[in-house]
Image (cartoon, rainbow, N blue to C red; front, side):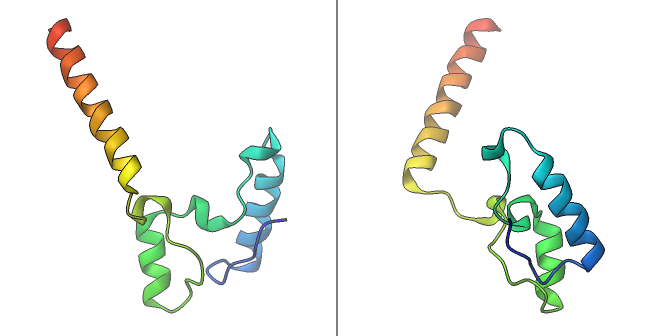
Length: 85
């Protein structure tokens, strides 16, 4: 079962946990609601002292390897689009 977080009310937690358990395959299930959190909700909960989880994925700085892959992907797409156009 996923870790309970301070940002959710009891009914929100129950609904999230139920929906998370329904995901198939099981490897698609989140270990924490923090994995589904967006930046604005995290900021709102942090401001009122109710964020006790990890930063949402979109706020975690990318690793050097991720940046390199993203740069390669952008270069590939730029080259591909110039050939098509």
